[in-house]
Amino acid sequence: MILCCGEALIDMLPRETTKGEPAFSPYAGGAVCNTAVALARLGRPTGFFSGLSSDLMGDIIREKLDASNVDHSYVATSDRPTTLAFVKLVNGAASYAFYDENTAGRMITEADLPEIGDDCRAMHFGAISLIPEPCGSTYEALLMREAEKRVISLDPNIRPSFITDADKHRARIERMAAKADILKFSDEDLDWFGLEGSLDDKARHWIAAGASLVVVTRGSDSTIGYTATEKVEVASEKVEVVDTVGAGDTFDAGILASLDLAGLLTKDKVRTLSANAIRDALALGAKAAAVTVSRAGANPPFAHEIGL
Ligand SMILES: Nc1ncnc2c1ncn2[C@@H]1O[C@H](COP(=O)(O)OP(=O)(O)OP(=O)(O)O)[C@@H](O)[C@H]1O
Ligand SMILES: O=C(O)C(=O)C[C@H](O)[C@H](O)CO
Image (cartoon, rainbow, N blue to C red; front, side, top):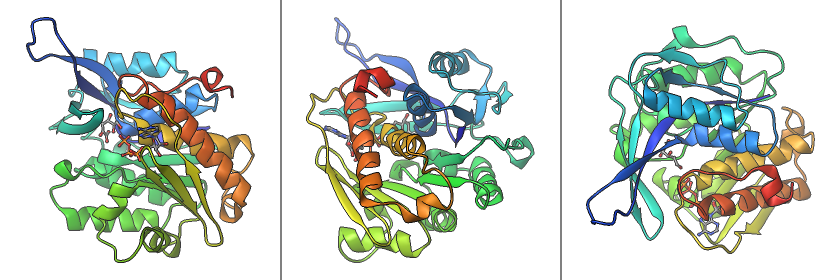
């Protein structure tokens, strides 16, 4: 099983109405939840750990997890509210306003952390669940506790509007990245860290920090994967974009699914990936993410939709 650990929330997506008044529709989302759904839809055994509400928005999330065959038995359920993300779309590109005060996702603590079964090969972390407290410290503690035992994937998925203390967040990501095997950034996320030099220099900073594979996505352009010895670039697919909600999250799932299918999701094997293995992982990420951007909200493809 690949266990995705982090936020599930409701994306409130803007929609057209006949009378032109403002309106939003609720869609289950949250970057890490999106990755779990995408991975399971790609046919990989997938689990999800988070704080999840027993309210009706929590039910929308649970229904999506069930419909996509994601095991959510690790989830910590409470009657606190569900986190909301109101989405603004400009030419399909999304920005977010988050409402997470006192929510089920935000308020989880180390006391909520489950024991993880031996069937868990890899864990995926990331996004806004790493920012506020107490959930930020909780996920950091979980990653630190498990990093020697399983492959760790981390996607910082920077949301600048939500980060109140940039230095604190940078320091947390540096500590977590030092224990991670796979790191994925968008080029904008990578720039947020304020590192000097070219894109290659910035990516290689994270290899030097300890990661085995660093992936940098560049929207409709391409994605580049780096290891200590390889650099592989794969072009993005050409599609009509509806919105980019969940694109990077789906890409994470593509990388993990490809490595898992190739039997490479072990601590040892992920350290010595060949150029071909990296290319396959990026190609599956690009193929799956292209479907997500071609439809509304975070709605990643099932394996059969991309011929897997
Ligand atoms: N316009 C597009 N056309 C085709 N593929 C796209 C497009 N935009 C994004 N993608 C795919 O999704 C991947 C991730 O997109 P991007 O680099 O924008 O990451 P992101 O900003 O993390 O996404 P998000 O935060 O919206 O989930 C890209 O590498 C690409 O494969
Ligand atoms: O969870 C997050 O980090 C969000 O920004 C909310 C969205 O559901 C998600 O990221 C979509 O990519």
